Amino acid sequence: MTKKATPDQIAAEWIARLDRRQLTAEEDRLLQNWIREDVRHKGAFLRCQAIWHATNRAQALRSPAADWSQRRQLPSRRMVVSTAAAAFFCAIFVPSGTTEAKIFYETHRNILHTPEKWRRKLILDCHTKVEDSSCDTRVISGLCYVTACDELVKTANLRFIVNGSLLVSQGQNHESGVVINGSAHVWRRSISDPKCLTTGTRITVTSRGTLRFSHLDKDELVRLLAWTTGQIALETETISEAADIFNRYNQKQIISSFRLGDQRLSGLFDLNRPDIFVQAARSIAGARVREDAHHFYLE
Amino acid sequence: MLGDQHYSYWFAKHILPNEHVVRTWLGRFPQIEVDDIIQEAYVIMAEAELDNISNPIAYFYTVCRNLILKHYKKARIVEIVALADVQNDLLADHMPSLEAVADARAELRFLNSVIQRLPERCRNVFIDRKINGFTQKDCAKNRGISENSVEKQLARALLSISKFYAQRDKSQAIPIRGGVGNDKKSHS
Image (cartoon, rainbow over all chains, first blue to last red; front, side, top):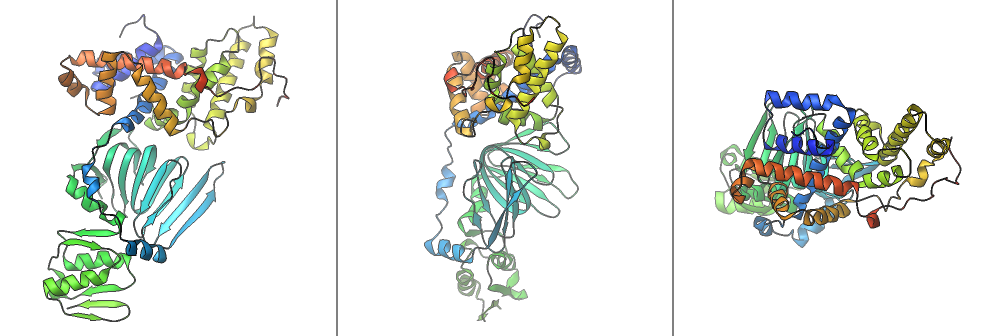
């Protein structure tokens, strides 16, 4: 790095080098020395680093070629009406110690589409808790689909800066994020170096606390998002597993027998129509169906 | 990488988009090197507890104001008028209104215009890396140039963007009320 250049110029050169590859020990020593030389050097570096991150917003200028998104079906009128009627959520405005407000969302058996606020749009799956504020969105538990431009999304251990759409899951022993569209920078709470995730990349924190990265294809992404339009795409699930999914969204519960439980049934179903799924189980898997006010029994 | 990335994103979101407003204000004070104050302010803010900062721009102002006072007190030849100006400066007068605080869309428009103003070679590399998401290695392959060239063009782009942020179009600047010799009441 040239010595005659301005601090801004030298800082820009270091940022570009850091983006290219990891510094060698010698380069790292040179950088640290330069930063220690003058407080203005450190300031120039911090500012340049911020500019580098600010330009991540430019990704939004790219025309998205998300052809797969067009395959998603719009929710049926019945689904919209039934969801609206059954919707139960609480949105509590929590005044914090500062001037900024927080909204706490909680869903039970419903899917919640929040209005756009703070340049973010959220879709909460059933049994999900989210705290939304002007600074960030914190997924406390459950599954949340976030669409945002350069906004911070948190789980217990992960921090995402989302430029596009991200599906975030927070369970008791696991947490994960999948980039559905655009990109996201992610880092662990205790680790400072972020990783850039592109469309289809999933990051998972395992129960042992290690990070795993995997890549999902477009079909798998569509399947993962089916619930956002009130649908479920069954592929590998057994009838028993499918029943568990339907039961999370509906008051009327599906109880399957051991005989049927391990059989598989694939297809796209309306999450709010367990009766259609039951009919399919009857005609395809040969299930005998009994029904009372609160249950479907598949035998 | 130096510092916590959280700070960097916080600067990118709250400080950079409004930095030009503070620069304009700093320009009023004689014997002050604006770049020096801004750079030192970033260092001070990088050591702050961000969760306790409810108004980042006001905080940025306060940090810069204190740095100017420190500078004037250190330099014994300062005119009394200049020192009084800083002390009497009503911070609230310089706060942009809520509507004026740069929002994401305005930022995107600004970035778009900045990218268009980059020299062609520099712009192409920047677009490949930051918009299309290629690595520097892939940028080099796509453009048929060396990785060193890509790195240099990116550094050049970054420096230009840094200058654009500092000298953001005056028409975009949030108007600052009051002139030198503030005639409004002072807090102090």
